[in-house]
Length: 268
Image (tube, rainbow, N blue to C red; front, side, top):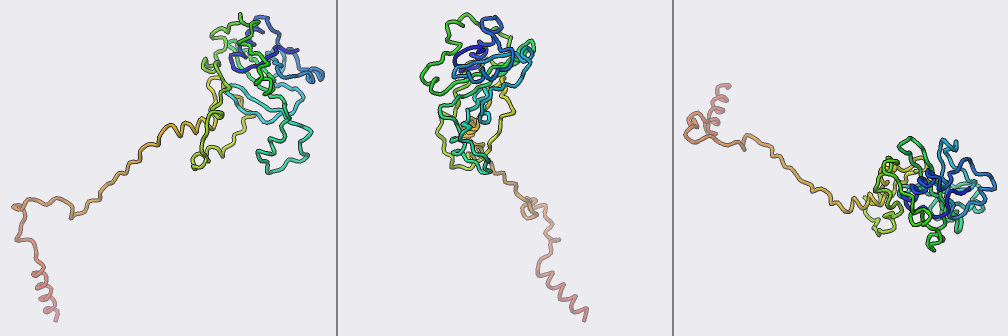
């Protein structure tokens, strides 16, 4: 029932599987897995199907998985240990309690979907364990001699950016050592977005919080300019030339004092 046995590391690997199915080198899944087939899922199992051909969009395997996370062009899930799951979920769940619910040496599931130029909706599900990948026990389609003749035709998958076919797993979170003491970094990391219902766009690699942090750190803040606009008063206005001033018409303080004294006497 497996379409392929190996490790889907990059989107290019997924496209090779789709092309091999299109050229009848591999077989697509035509129906949902039976209970017996679900039990046989192992590290290295890869399943590919056409949504219209198989009559299914969602994949069911009978296992319990963590919420999805975006890793390159894939959605990834970690297998949970159902025997250690608490009966009641606490409202305050921390990272340590979530980590304890992961199944020891459990599987990791990847999902990849794409729409072809002919509006054919293709899906791929792959399973692997970290130990198998680190030990090199699973081969990639791109390095498999049996699939060496499979070439992905240009334009057949227009939704996929060519830059996305080279990687997808080189997440920047593994290559950075950032200090989280500044308020701007804390603000970025305090936002936890649930991507379970939002599949990644294949036209561009999704950015992670670490990508945004690197952008903030690599680009210096714009210089802050202070603009001062002076407020003009009459005393600050320029004076006319001396020859243009009517000096005889300018009252002096002494004249004003004498006029005030005469007005006071007339009132008496």
